[in-house]
Image 1 (cartoon, rainbow, N blue to C red):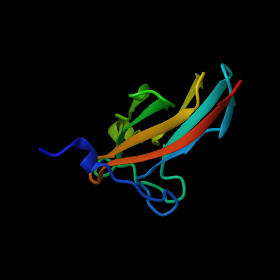
Image 2 (image 1 turned 180 degrees about the vertical axis):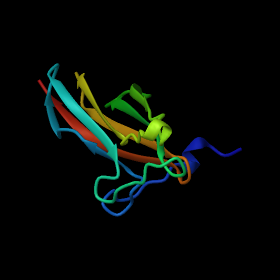
Image 3 (image 1 turned 90 degrees about the vertical axis):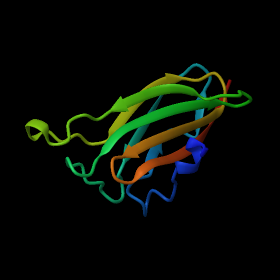
Length: 125
């Protein structure tokens, strides 16, 4: 049996339109609110049509020293041309962190599957 991890794809988001791009500060103060933005298609636009679209983005925080990541966001994009509405796969989250760690983002393209990316965040007292 294959692990789900074997299906995760990654790459340089500047050259691959499916990789989730994570905009987050490199440093944060303990307990201070920060904004994390995740989008798909920053450098190379991803088509968002009924035939080819990003269905969802999930965002996790993995605190340093913890065994498992914590899901901090789950965003579904449901309108892919219905009623002439086309959603852009872009989200923003505001969080307060007490520990350093990494932000992980997953995105799902209905044609090209699962994509991942991550960034580190340092947390200072």
